[in-house]
Image (tube, rainbow, N blue to C red; front, side, top):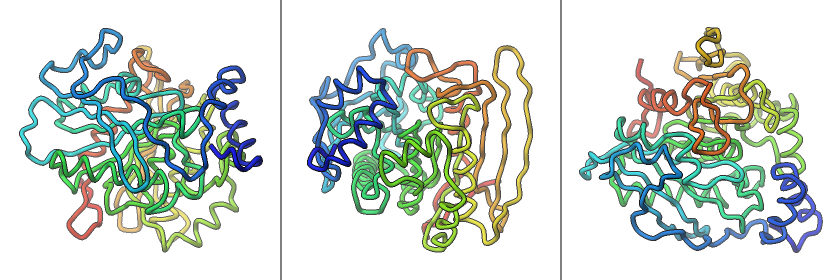
Length: 366
């Protein structure tokens, strides 16, 4: 937080009110003020070394006891963060794919892991999963600061911090450098977009749930505006002019059409953004199929977008009836709705088809 600048102070407090509500925001906000571009040191870890699965985390107890669920701290040039890491039982130092999971507001790694059930799926699919933690000392609502200019560019702010953390974990666990992915929910989804755009040589693809496009906000007030209404054509004209200098990675994006925190128009804008970066014309071919509601599962519209060469630019899922919640998630975590299609499983399916080649370009299997 920037308590030295009254204008930025007011912005951050207003955003905290929007995300948390007045009582909780007031308490947490005034306990969490710090300069805008100073990365917070991590808060004390709840445990060191291997953490035992608890009965309160049903998603974690369903994975084998021999799997590794560790609490660690990263310290780098841009600051420090606690994080948790899940390593599947079958790990034997061979290169495995890895997902960096960025939680949303009011969440932490345990909560996010439980709600997405990603660890259980990663056990079967043999993925390493990393959960960086945003402390309240960096943002009153524990949001990643996706909207700040200094956190939207390469080698700066939280984007650089997360990229550094990613590289350290890759080295420690001998992860497959061609199969590193980033995913997130809400503010974490927006930060995952920042990373996909600014570090296309590191992340092969991104999974975004209830997130926002890149570069459409530059402070807390504009962030609230786009969260409520989506972006503007003017903003996309600016992106189009800059698109030759922007890289892209294939995205799979999920959004509930009843989301009252991040307007679902942002999901359309996100795919549109990636097409702006990826294609030479203003339009991309689309293939659309709609699935009706049955057996208590929300219906959805699934759309595929392609670049000029026929490669996948984006896969979009609009979930009919879903609010601001992880589709197909576990009630053991916050902001989840088990009635939707399984977003975590679909993300893994999408990631399985995409890798970086040695030249840094993407490869997409049929």
